[in-house]
Image (tube, rainbow, N blue to C red):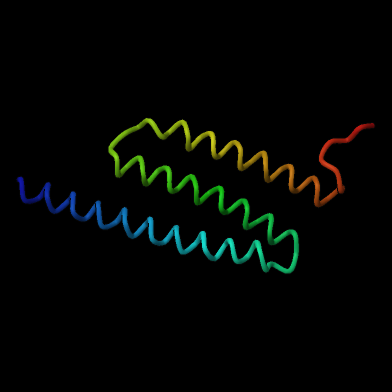
Length: 101
């Protein structure tokens, strides 16, 4: 039984590190898209995807550290990413974020 638990822990740790590596590569490509992207809409989508990647990093870190303290941070990042996406979309559509009419 002990061997099965050790094997499971090893597989989990390898999977977590593969996940960290994949997210790091994704973040590098998204930063390139933000810098070089030909249109503002593509930059907005890349920023939203960076928010999702930050949530994934927090989840993987929570699994790696065996804690549930980071769950609130994941929710907070999700809310802030959503509000940022709404603000960027409104700016791209109307040119202003807050209407003063």
